[in-house]
Amino acid sequence: MKPRMILLALGLSLVVAPMCFAQNLNMGTLKLNEAKSKIPAGSPKNHTVVYEAVGDQIKVTVDGTDGDGNATHNEWTGKFDNKDYALVGDPTADTRAYRKQGARTLLMTVKKAGKVTINGRIVVTANGKSRTVTTTGTDAKGKRFRTVAVYDKA
Image: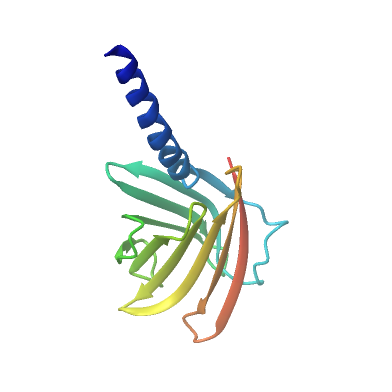
């Protein structure tokens, strides 16, 4: 009976371990690497982004500056299930939705009053030490934009 239990435990660990590792790639504190990023002058910048587990949900906390250099802070708590969850602290948006696309990519949709304002693609490197966030959208003045922000894990 003992060999059976050992094999069962080993089998379960082989299934569960990769799932935990994949989720961990999205977790942690990230710092903007401005030298590697392509953010147009006068655009908002997210200097620090923190992904953390809160129960069965994910909390994303963002600190940065707006286009005028004023401090910004916003928070989102939800799941990576492509459903809109409330975004608190961002005057340009009220919901954000994430969905997984493979093990290392998240797709993001940001809305204001139900209208999509930003689409994003977040790709984590295979080693999990950095990620590239590409966003496209329309700003409050109706001008189209595209940014590529590179973040390093702190």
